Length: 278
Image (cartoon, rainbow, N blue to C red; front, side, top):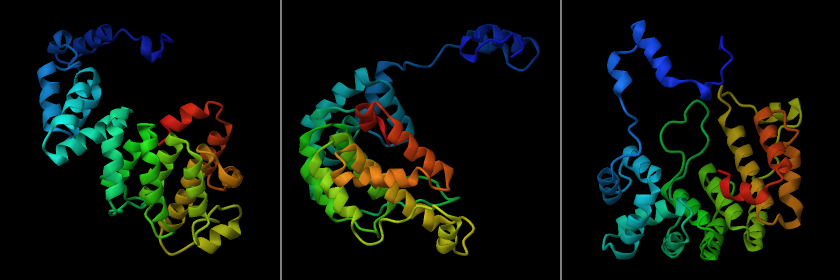
């Protein structure tokens, strides 16, 4: 800071040497080497075992030049259905269209599992279900094979469905960018209880208030509406409903909702937003 040097331009070895001299770091630090990229044998083992834990998942996704060909081989040749599903999931999340047939078949055959609702002061562990992840992976393949099974799953949702399910279909629909999906999201937003959750006045806040200090229910309902509107807006915006809802949330009293809606509406690189939004 005193030298007005950008953090990214710091000479790390010089900084480490200074910290060694004052006893903050041990001298061994000066000869340590970066652990990445990992040895190819470690990557092959993690890929063979699959995403059984966070370490394996990080290794697989962090070394795609080695892991993706191995995952393709598992997808095509493994006799273990779960290993094939795991491979399809990872390949789909990496945007590989080869995973689309398997993912489309899985998503078409499954019914909604237990999802996750937004929980104020309680976000621990997974915030999406297995089917949520598979649907997002299917969308990321950008394959038209994903449209029919996604339409099936959207039709099953309503105001009582968990937030994570609404988020998953929104992300996948935005990525696939098909007007049939736009119509399905439009129809979903017509169902009772899914619209009208923006807070545009203190009176609206008071109407939805309850005795819970974390005010989870109001935020969960607003998140479902906002993300479904975003997905609709990004995949064709049937009847302009997605934009209309986003414009409403752009003046929501809750700044984080307003800023998100404003950012989506202001984005000029919509194709990139469709691929990257989560």
